[in-house]
Image (tube, rainbow, N blue to C red; front, side, top):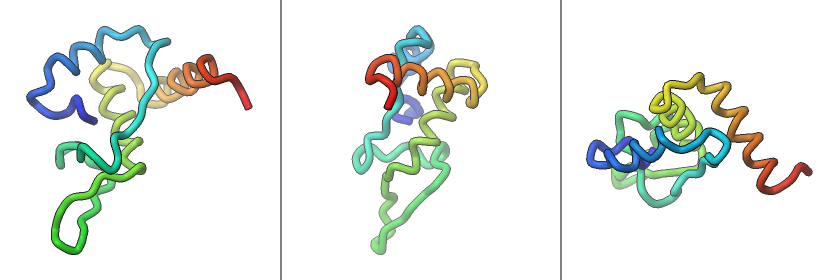
Length: 90
């Protein structure tokens, strides 16, 4: 959800332009907390600081699919196929 930051126009443009068969998705957890408006699973530590964690991977999928104008389920299947193409099947 790094591209969700309003100052990341070039990142959003690159996400839109990337061929679907070339996309993999990751989080930057624990670094680079996504903007609050896109976090689906916010966690706050005892001092009130927002934390980034791997569950926000779902947030990244939803954000990228929406940005590309794609159904999140179809986008998820495409990313899974890309993963298997790159790394092979178990």
